[in-house]
Length: 405
Image 1 (tube, one colour):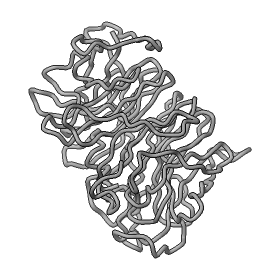
Image 2: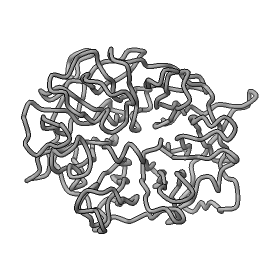
Image 3: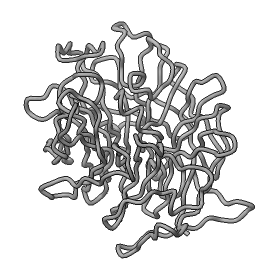
């Protein structure tokens, strides 16, 4: 996901001065006047010593997962509870991260970590190729699950590398992993085929996890899963092996039912980069997708945020803010509220909220100024939003939580 890493710019809610933050869900008729500050923003100064942190997931009790850089520039997965940060550490290598909304209501966290094992094929795997981990190494990167203070490595499908993205409240985890097959359609120093994976606890065992392949659409060689809801429906991509992942590996957006059967999700009409990012309990899906346009057939990233309502014949283009050419929808809650990022224009990256058919700059309806809310990564059912904010004084990028007033 080389291009995704550049655009997915990516907290627990804490009270200030001892006050407790409260939140309430928005009803279907709620509106957000653009000129009114409707969200209260709390930014977390706690980090692991660096100047870059990001909240990528927020659960029903306000626990936030994401990552924070250390003073030496390495990155570790982290969680924030009441503004205090916990380092999740790594699987033995220098870096780890929670790049997707990989957090459930029980506090289980999933993500990626470099190990201390050398990759015998020296591949450009997703963790580093996509910029999710800043250090370029020749180490194997694996998906992980963290719970009760312990990080565990997730098994692959017979290859070397893995990548975990999402987890539901049934402890089912999704992502992608390599098989042992040498795939000639792979590019960018990717050698082994990769497929979407569903990881879940083995029946009758304690602490053991089994990996189940989620196959691509007929005729495709590769797949990757990006999110899963509590009904066991997963979403992701299907296409060529290509780079791991994105571009031509995202020729199709896919929904896997609870039995693992894939079906295609409508896209915005282009050839490449059709990537779901989240699915809610109703089966509604958001993400980003290339419309037809110059560069699309060659794999240039020209995507817009999309919403596909379960059962609809078409995906809806959510557009962009102002003059921005690009946008991505990153999360959707049970009320149909969508958050994400708009970017590529003269105003720089900005977080957005879409609801009731209207795309809003989150900065216009929040009390964050003069700080800038750069991206909205996740939204829970209470309407709380997490992402990243640029501090106007220090220039640091911090985790924020925005709560409806």
